[in-house]
Length: 298
Image (cartoon, rainbow, N blue to C red; front, top):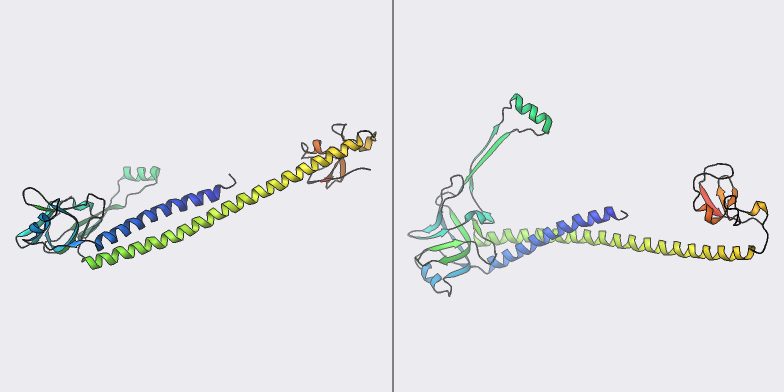
């Protein structure tokens, strides 16, 4: 429990650092992927471009065209269209950036009943109301789709999330604006990684220094204890052949010489062995023991 605070702080910092690192590498992958993207316009020659690839698909392409979409509760199929040429978009909700226009943003306050008030009293949770937001991809909006472009056996072009894990985007921004946004996000996570990495190093250094200091103090204390033990053995060896007076013998064990003075009363009445187990009151006057020091009666 000695390092509990530092361990908790280091654990929280490590979790945040791991999340920031993961986001940083993800943003860096996204930036590199968008930089290397092959830009294609939706048109009649798009089929020939896709057929020219070995697998009838481009792993990562971008298209800056129009789209037709209708949003009812969830999603409906839509396509990027330019004249008679179109590219169907699948699994649009998996896009990391999906730009939609807010058509309705309404908050409806709740009128609580007596039962609701009783429930709120016991649970401590009060429902203020319900907010509903409706978003839609409008028809005729110029869009940029960044993903995997495939051509099926029926000759239909499909834009879908890349199977290699690279990001999927459907945005009203062009490729340049998208790159700037992703690069800015990457720089933010890079700064966060540096900050929390530095904090982790500082906290880790504090734990290491505290641990080394505790070990040093323990080693010094052990050396001091061993020196005192050796000194006590030598001293007792010298007095074994000498008959001690009554006022020189420990009042508890009646064997060893008196070796400890108790403060603040000032009585020298215990040997070191007995003083280790007596910490509350002086056995001579019952005064409270605040401090112990070595002492010898001659």
